[in-house]
Image (tube, rainbow, N blue to C red; front, top):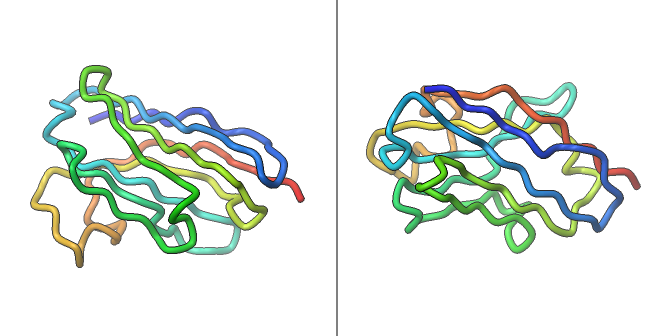
Length: 126
């Protein structure tokens, strides 16, 4: 599976960005899709996930109400809409995928995901 994230950039506090992650190489609708981020000097952390059919989403508390994950199975693409951005959202954002059962204790762990794309940099200026 190949994942390609795009859409990052520089934005001011309070602004918005939409990240996209295009996939290929496997039936997209078989995959649960996650977003993670890594700031300099920090570990890669969970942002959110969407189940293969789009019926389940989960987010880290710090982005709830500001970020929304969606997917278009016809376009093999998952999106991360980020609103009300804050400087602490600055990080490299990665999309990831896995095709197993969706289990609450596992979906937030990077090790659950077998497929990763290259990251896209998001910088929020204060």
